[in-house]
Length: 243
Image (tube, rainbow, N blue to C red):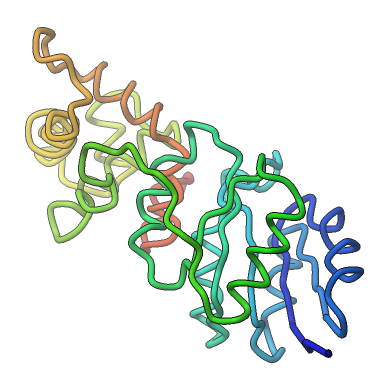
């Protein structure tokens, strides 16, 4: 029986997956986007896909700091080509903040660990194509997602400050105020008012130690990939690069 499925594989290694999909699904069209530009071309001016399987974090030097699976969802929305999305994960700790946000996105129909192998992936694609969301994966998070702390006016300012630090554009309060385009008085409160409280609320600061500017900068480095991604996707890309 013909399926007529249209599948988009968005991954630097997508071509490895394409051939088995084409061999196992009758009358299927598999499009591979191995780069950000290929992804944009694949979704612009084309009919909607039945399933989009995208890497959550792109393990590619030229892409990992500029494009990820959450960007892919936003691009689909921008061109009015929303489709059920499966996000493929590698199991790295760097993915956790991205995963926390992904679980809040209605467009995400499932999270698939790459370690499960090719055949389970094909089964997952088939299930989503038939209108079924994948079973929720176990999640050990005990704190609110970082994403939720970056909402509202104060959260947005916190995100700009954190993004500028994560991008390596700040070494002190003066350079932080310039990079994040905020008043010096705002940059001076980065520890006490903006990022410090987030660290404490998430249990990411040892209460027995002083909450220093150095601790805040190290925290931004630990969450750098997500903070850069958040700024890029929420209208704050200006803090990530020099004027």
